[in-house]
Image (cartoon, rainbow, N blue to C red; front, side, top):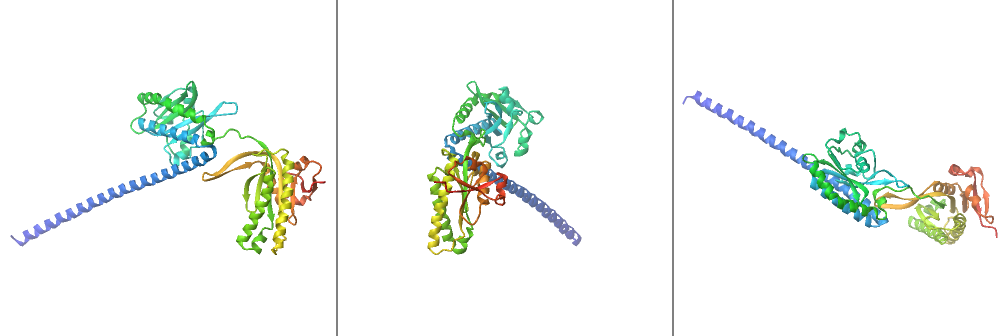
Length: 430
C-alpha cells in the first residue's frame, strides 16, 4: 500500500474521530442542559413547596391564636370544611377552590361575601383570606340567584371580580359555582376553579351538587359556633362602651438606672408597678398594657365599675400615696432618688375593645380618644411632684368633695388635642 493511501486512510480515520468527538460533546452538552433544566425545575418545585409550608404554618398559627381566644369548636369545624373542600377538588380535578359565607349587616341583610375556606394554601391565596368579595361577582351571583353554573372563560364575564385575581396573582378562568343550602336557607357558596384536565362540564356539576349537602351542613354548623366571625377575620360593628382610662408613669426614671445597676433598677420599677396596680385592682381596674415604667389601666371595661370616673380618680390618688411610701423606703436605704415622681393622667369617653397583634402574640386593648388623652394628660403633668391630672370633661363629672386646681395653659402640651384645660386633682375635702 502506497504511503499516499495510508495517509488518506489515517486522515479519514482522524476525520471520523473528530466527528465522533463533536457528536459526543454535543450529546453531553444536551444531557447537561436537560439535567440542569430538571434540577432547576426541582428547585423551583422545592421553593414552591417551602413557600406553601410557610403559608400553611402561618394559617395554622393564626387559627390557633384565635382558637385560644374564642374556643376550639369553630376552628375544628373549619378544618372539617377544609377537608371536605379538598375532597371535592380532588374528585373534580380542580386546582383551586373556595367556600364563601354571606356577610350580614346589623339588620341581617347580606352585604357581601367572606372566605371561609380557600385552597390551596399558599402565599398567593393567603392574601385573599380576609378580603371581602362583593355580591357583584360570580360567587355573589351564585348566592343571590341561588343557581349552580359552570363558566369556561370567566375572564369575559362582567361579573368576574378581577381584583381578587390581582391581589392573589391567581388567574381563575374555568369556574364551577354551587350555592350551599341547609334546608331552605342559603348558607354559602362553593366555587371550584381551573380544572386540570379539560373543563368543568354538566357531569362535574351534577356530582358536586349531589355531594354538596354534607358540606352545606358543616358550613351551617360552623356558623353556629361562638367566635366564628373572629376566625374569618370579620366582625360585626364593635360595641361602644364608656370607660375611664388611667395612665401612670414615673418622671425622671432614668435616675434609677443612673444610681443603681440594671437589675436593681428593674426591681424598683416592678416594685412600683406591683404597688400601684394592686391599688388599682382593688378599685376594679384592669391592666390594658405595660409600657416601660408606665401602665395603662381601664375602669368599667370589661369589668363593670359603678361611677367609674370618680372611682378611677380615687384609685389614682391612693396610687400616688402608695408610690410615695415606696419611694420613702428607697430614700431610707440611702438611694438618691429624690427626683423620681409618680404621675397619672385620666380621661373618660367611648371606647371599643379589640384583639390586635401577630398571631403568635396577641392581646386585647381599647381604642378611642380617651386612650390617647390619658397618656397625653399624664405627660402634661409637672415633673417636680406626684400629680394626678384630669381633663375638663372629667373634672365636670367629679362630685364636690374633690379638689381640682386648673393648671397653666403651658401645661397642656399634647393634651391640647383633647381639652382646653387640665386640672390637678388633690385629696378630697373631708
